Length: 166
Image 1: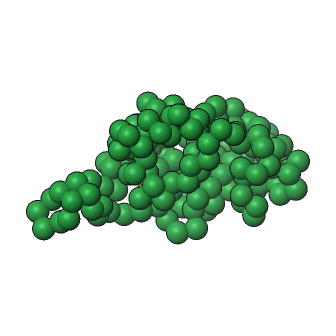
Image 2: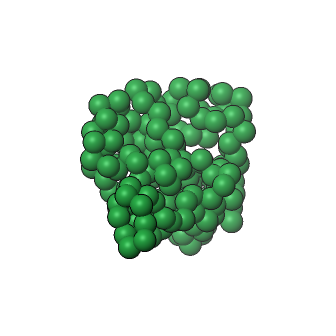
Image 3: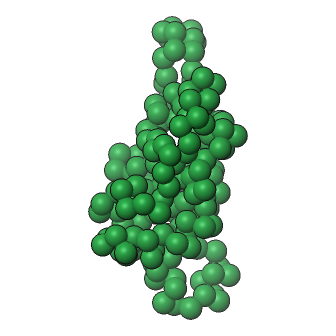
C-alpha cells in the first residue's frame, strides 16, 4: 500500500496543478458549481483514500494562481496538502512514519530512499508513475505493479529498495 503521493520535485507548476485538478475531476467524477438539486460551489465526489497523504510542493505564487483559477479548491477537496517555498529534500516535508511513496518525479524516485534514510526513517518502497497513476494510487492506496522489464532485469537488491520486488 501507498502512504504518500509526493508531487512537485522540482516545484509543481500552474500547468501541472491544472492537469492534476482535471485528472481528479475525471477520475472521481468531481462536480464543481451548481447542479440540479445542489448548492452553489458544492462538491460531490470520491476523495483520496483515508491514510494516503497527497502532498504537493510548489511556489507560493503558483499556489495563489491555482487558487484564483479554481484548481486549488478542487485539489483541497480531494485531500491534497500544499507545501510552499520548500522542496522534498528538506526533512520537514517527508512525513514521519512514511513507508511507501508514489511520485511522478523520476528525480524524487531516485533520491527519496537516501533522503528518507538520512532523516531517520527508511522507506520500504518508492514507485514512479504518471500523474494519472498517482491519482489512482491516492484513491486506491495501491501502487501499480512493477513492469516486467524491471522485474526481469533489475538487480533484486534495488527492487527491494524501490518497489519491494512485487
